[in-house]
Image (cartoon, rainbow, N blue to C red; front, side, top):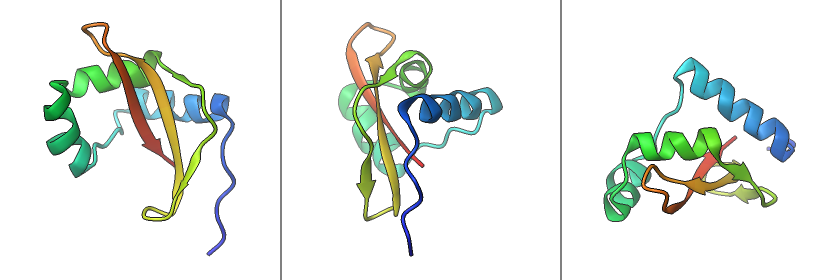
Length: 88
């Protein structure tokens, strides 16, 4: 199976904002039950980063999920640094 083309940071951010607007953000099991409790963050922290953060790095290919992994870097509601991962 051929890899889908990667999105530019701007296009990936637009896609994330559209999904946020439509309420279609899903959290992986790992994120919800492992990463978030470990960091003492909740959904609102992650949603804040996805809305206000920036994609500063080129995407990485995820062999496990067979899609591109985008790192959205920003801050949680306590103003602590936080990176959220979105797969497309």
